[in-house]
Amino acid sequence: MFSISDRHAGIYLATRIFAAACNMLALVLFTRLAAPAVFGDYLIGFACAFVVYAIAVQWLLQAFFARHAPADAARAASAALVAGGALVAVAGAGLALAAATGLLSAAMAAGCIGLVIGLSVFFAMVEIGRTRLLATAVGLASVLRAALVLALGAPVLALTQSAPALLGAVALAHVLAALPVAARLRATLWADGFPRPRRADIAGLARYGWPLVLSLGAAALALNLDRMLIGFFHGPEPVAAYGAVADFIKQSFVLVGEAVAAAYVSAAKAAHGRADAGGTRRALERALVVLSLACVLGAAFFLTLGDTLFALLFAPGYGDAAREVLPLLLAGTVCLVLRAYYFGQVIYFSRTAWADVVSSAAMLAATGLSGLLLVPPWGAAGAALAFAAGQAAGLLVFVLADPGGRLMPRDPRRLVRAIHRQPGVTPR
Image 1 (cartoon, helix red, strand yellow):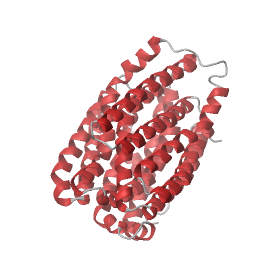
Image 2 (cartoon, helix red, strand yellow):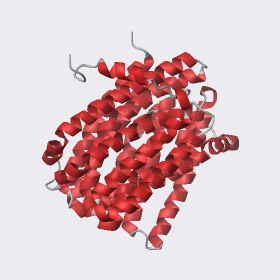
Image 3 (cartoon, rainbow, N blue to C red):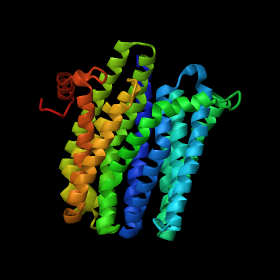
Image 4 (cartoon, rainbow, N blue to C red):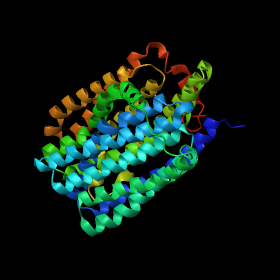
């Protein structure tokens, strides 16, 4: 008989496979519909909006997921939504000020504001849905988001050749995709109405989550700084090819990472809340085995077929970017997945989030310093090396902060045995 975590893993993985296929198709189609400068501007705009979202809202949602309790679930969720709405308003005012001072064009600022709103709505519904174990609704939201980005983004891009317009289409896709989860929450969590949150609820989220403002903001900037530096030193055109290759690889690896975090880490947190140390450890060990195996198989696939794949899928010239950056992007992405979807989940099993802050600071420092030194002379290759260095630094901090795997188990012998047993990984 399958456990709840096994069933949820299957639901999340199936929906994420479909969503990943749509995302990859959208990426391929966008590279063929847009001029490189337009697509590069879109990638830079998306990066800016995501950094703003991470600083303004993401920390709050992470704190809510870590602190939620079934006894006051409706009021806690209401507190997260009210606080999140206020923070989105502040973020929007900041982007409007950037446009007024000439740091952004008015059109790009509007596109970024819309995307911050879309990201906030979508991920708020998803995080609240995860706490209610609404696996089907959350999975459907992921599918809808990917399908709508493709369905709305492609015609907008073809008709306008405008990066801000594409940002607006992607923002609308996020809002519409959140509706199934919102409907299920309205029928279950908020069936008796939307309770007014207490000031203490919001204060509790702030006390737990304020270190995450630094860590998530630094992490988001570190994840996007490579393409921002390419754009700053070399213009938006080379960002298009580099970003397309990097995002395709990340999407492939993040696919399983998200499924593991949504299913096994959620189950581990539930066991942790019941003071079931054995159940917590078993769920986390299973998560690490699945994640490590996915990284091994994924890296082998891209190293073998990546050059040919990118030359066939993307617009002419995009495949050339893959050849010089592929090994570095793979190394950085493996570190990213292990950090974000396993070792970084330690915040749900410890009383503080300081390890996350230090990891993010190390990641940003390594990416920033390497990028400033390497991107001006080496372009995309320098950016890929900076990305890999930053992700490795962030992962190393988490490993060193948990000696012996006391909180997040890591048994190298168990991992080697599990990988060795998989068909096709080693010769029979």
